[in-house]
Image (cartoon, rainbow, N blue to C red; front, side, top):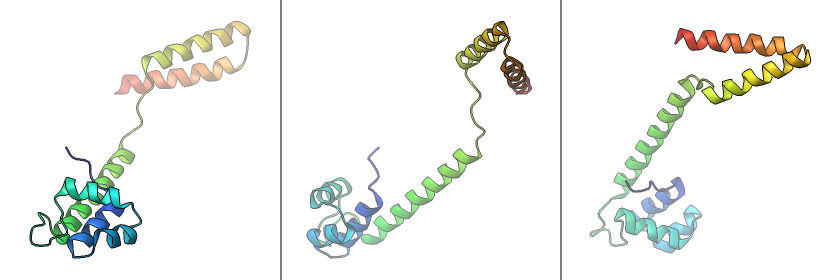
Length: 125
């Protein structure tokens, strides 16, 4: 799957597809000319509007769709519950709790309470 152009590159592609020169479009978007020419080859945009495979409207629509997809993915990631600790991490915490108990430190009870809570959460899944 081809890489999606950045927003600045997409803006420059829109400018080229609408008739601006490559140099002018790159300067307006704040990107290097070489970056823009690479993106033009990848996307099929040319300086000749009749031969251009993509129009400015198509590029803008693709850019908006990519933005919407990125926002939907961000919302989905935020809605997902955090991953449960892995087995290895729990084993390390159990070892630490045992060491703390052997040393007679009061933090062992706190860690035991946390580990018991994690075990209850794992069982409820």
